[in-house]
Length: 348
Image (cartoon, rainbow, N blue to C red; front, side):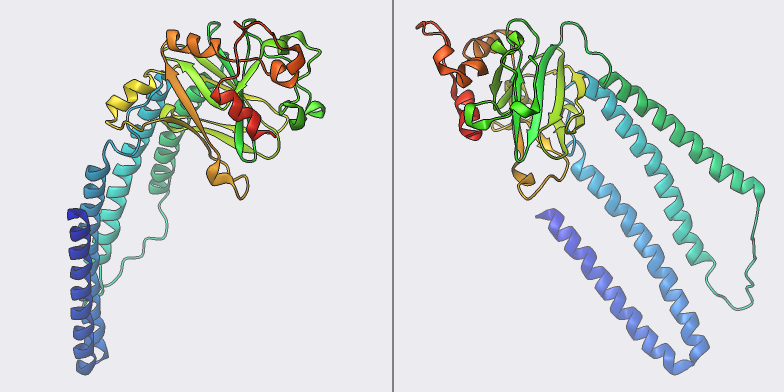
């Protein structure tokens, strides 16, 4: 409420200044064209300075108000470096912004038209051009170099002990596949995609590695354990956005992409840290992919190793869903949990 009142006061101040300026302009017209122009210049110069001061106050106020609320703390170890790069970029561009805006508005005020003042024409200066070309080039090169460093790290080979999760986008949901006990994902063939028989990814059932792969509608990760995402698309270009982890990668049809990271906090810990009992890690589609794009949201659950193992024990291989007759008949065999039932309902 206080923020709204502050904005309202600023708007009212500008309205009052504008009305005063208009009244002064009408009076000046009666005094003659030259005097009217001089009066208009003075008013515009004053308004420029007022706009500069109020604008900088507004920038400071917004930053102070939203500090810590836009990004929050990174939930992945690799995201810390991304945050550092973001803040360094903001500092550099912020300093440049303030300097250039102050000079712009101050020069417009100081060098307004005045009696007996003649403009100084300054068409060319090699030294100045070199300075304002080389300095930004160096700054941008440094920022790009640090950005590439983080990019190469995120897309490099994942640690050997990293978990593997395959995420495939399709209009308008995510298909999540995990390898079974063998730790390897089975072969896929787009020609074998058939949702009617619970094979939305086109798994090749002749490949023994597919026999224990399972699918869910949620991504479950172990806290403080590296995870590698293998990302793809079944139709158009999507984009796996992981805002809390500071990760983002395109999902391209026919071209698998990868990234890896290490979650720092469980979902339960983040609920406490954010003071939000409804907090969830999410997968957003950051690429416009059709009229249902807005609804393409996935959920990530970060948990302890024990909780993860208990969850995995409940999963039924996709082969069993596609071939019910071949599924284990033992009463101790795992049955499809709620997430796998959701997968089945989504693909039919």
